[in-house]
Structures are given as structure tokens and as C-alpha cells.
Amino acid sequence: MKSLLVILACLFVTANCALYFAAQKEIPGHEGQCYDEDGTFYEPGQEMKSEPGVCSRVICLGSREGGEIVNERATCGSSHIYPACKVTQDLSKPYPDCCPRVISCEGIPEISDNSF
Image (cartoon, rainbow, N blue to C red):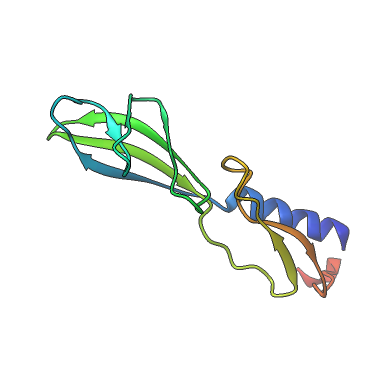
């Protein structure tokens, strides 16, 4: 039973992420720089400020052809958790430590060696 919980927790931790890219229009005078909603500019490779209340990491990747600026956004993604599992999340921690984590599960049926 304990090994099943460890495997489930490991699967949750390793597979629970989403990565996508967002494009912005380049601002004259700040070519190659990304920016956030507060008007703060970031150089390529710099970590940008994430949205409040969202567990994520945003990295400025810089400009590409066509006058667009690209940033990489990593979030926790979504998961389907067994209803009897308790989940915790601490948004004060940096990504990915702020992602939801399973802390305990009750009532998960045992898997016998004969069930495969």
C-alpha cells in the first residue's frame, strides 16, 4: 500500500506541469526585451514576475522575426486526483515548489500481484 502511494505521488509530481510560449509585440526603444503588465522590462534569459496567486515561472526568451517578443511560461498544469486524497499548495514558494502536492490518500484499493 505504501509503495502504491509513493508511486502515485511521484507520478503526480513529475507529470504535473504545463509549458507554453507567449508572444508580445515589441516596444520601440526596448527591442528584444520582454515586459509585464506593470511595464517592467526584462532582458532575454531573465525570469519575469509571475501573476499574483498563480504558481508559475516566466522566462524572457527575447525577439524573433516579425517584431514579436517571446516568453516561456511554466505552470503546474492540471491533474485528476483521487477524491480521498488531501492536497496542499504553498504559493509563497517559488515554482515548482508552489505546485499542489498530494500529502495523503485514504481508501485507495490495494493492487494485488494477480491483477495485471
